[in-house]
Length: 403
Image (cartoon, rainbow, N blue to C red; front, side, top):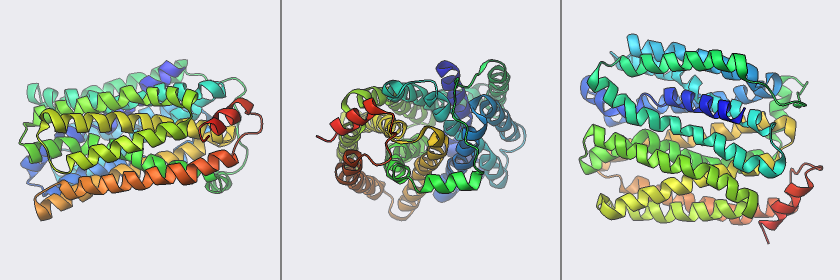
């Protein structure tokens, strides 16, 4: 079940990220401004992020067995639109990108689905492995431009649509919800209101905004940054972005595994410290070899590990019947965290001709998140806010993270 869910997450994220590698090409073909190009790649991010809130709550109610096929099948429609007719104008691209955001909601399906299959002491690693499905963005980065150059603009979209359709059928036939899964009976609005009252919802949202938001921002904007700031070709920039994604993907289960052993607070603090250092170094626009490459790869690893640690914290502190709802809100915060930076970077470059201010701002935000982790989140973990009464092993491990 973990493998099937991870594949589904990867396939949907592959679709979700189809527009990003083609951003520079659309800018040239349609004569887009830097802001318009940033908006184009950011629209699927914000829609996919906000959509996680209702999709997570629906997963609590109906289970991943029902929701994975539904989300995957629904994503086929905008992918086909973009491949067949939706790439000829900015308006058509924005419409297609809006509905392409459905693919980004798959995350809120997978976390509660996987969480229910594993005991508390193994959930950090399990959800980290599932989170590695965000490597679907690397598939897009490595293949989209090459397929367009070799064949046509429609090719990558048609291939992705076919893979999504195959997965939707496979998931409908093979996926099974965990035995004994807790099914809430309250109305959706009441469950969302109860979720909003949980402290872990907002603590994890703040941290995920930086960790996963930073990853999403780089994964959608790095090709443009490298092409504009360093003069790389579109293909070279896309390949380097794929390298960034792969490092982050590999480190996400590592972050979950370390959280099971050291505690999520320690892992988050270490990851955020690395992001601060990397963003400060890159704000001076050093040469790519070696300083720039080291800075970006270090941030990639830290953002991946921090994302895994955040959901290890969610898995330990959230009541079982609220996992989907909390995941939806936290996932939305992370995605929205990735929506704003590309717009900021595009606007700042258009105004000042440099990305330095945007990277300095990332360093400041990561430093603030680090202080918040060491003070507020640590205090909440020590106080045991939101712990499940029956999770004695989880209680001991959480307390151990703060001593």
